[in-house]
Amino acid sequence: MIRLIKNKLLKNNLYKIKNKNVILRVDFNIDLQKERLISKYRLNAAKDTIQKLTQIAKKIIIISHLENKKIKSFKKIIPLIEKFFKQKIIFCNSLNKDAIQKIKNKIVFIENIRLWPGEKSNELKFAKQIKELGDVFVNEAFSVSHRRHSSIYWLPKLMPTFYGLNFEKEIKLLNAILKQKKIILILGGAKISTKLPLIKKFLQRKASVILGGGLANTVWKAYGINVGKSLIEKYVLSDIKKIKSERLILPTDFYVLNNKKIFYRRLNEIRNKDIILDIGNESLNLIKRKLLDNKHYIVWNGPLGYVENKQFQNGTLQLTNLLIKLTKENKNIVVGGGDTIAFLENNRLIKKFKNISTGGGAMLYYLAFERLAFKI
Ligand code: ADP
Ligand code: MG
Image (tube, rainbow, N blue to C red):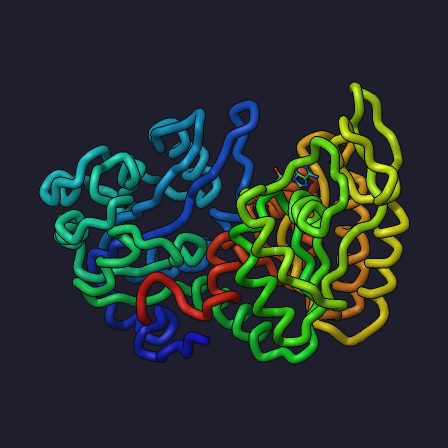
């Protein structure tokens, strides 16, 4: 578990930033739908820090990555980000110190950092180039902090570094989970491989682990059940076969697609051409009873079905509604994951949750290994 050190937190060190040129790393890996911003929660996560820095810093040089099949550059998105923060932001497609200093605006936004060679390949030389742009570094990008990328991994080793207001909150949120004895972990999504370390660790720690989506398909397949043509991950099957725990809870009924028609199937009825795309009601009821039953901390990451298609949203939506109800009853619930949050945003339900972790990969990594790509 990472212990946050006071003199590394932005909150306690604002005076060290006064009138300084601050390099601010954020995760604005956002998306557009019909020219409108989605994944606003990523902007929200940096809101407090940007507000504070605007009051005290001399200049804020924002760097972020954008990993999007359709949009490669921040240029066209900047007006939308400006609107969100209600601040003037100048886009800059250069890492030249003088060019940036010449810009007469408080906030300068550097082009997609992953477009430069050196960021993803984690080159020290590249971080040294970024370092020249400012006096201090603030990391407000928890969601990429498990990655060994140059601006994340090297920059804090090269200059005075502080961790942002939301970064601090996220670590505290996840530390609270790690301190709990009674946990129910609900994991869905496509791939089990990235979630295996976490599943194993939490089963060992006596947590209940409920699986859905492609993860459950893969486990059933490993146990020798026919899952037809459902999404699975082949190369982890032998590894999964070894996991046997009565606290590992798997769905036993499903909605499947077969020849373009939807059918309800129980576990042993699945046919060779079936594709499992959503969880069935019996399994959902079992999960509901489990969640209502006790005083556990609940952690949820990953949709329970193929939620991109409305016809297969039912399971995830029912789980969401139950978790909202439990949130109102003050139960501790932490939700995370890119696609999970996108689902909540699309259904306008995200504001109903109190504890959201912006990091999908970072959240899983931190919960499993209790560290990030760098030492704080
Ligand atoms: P997150 O980003 O929230 O961590 P993942 O990236 O692990 O979640 O997984 C999300 C993806 O899993 C979604 O695209 C969803 O459609 C897919 N998925 C979930 N269940 C199934 C299923 N039964 N078959 C195919 N895809 C599924
Ligand atoms: Mg995802």
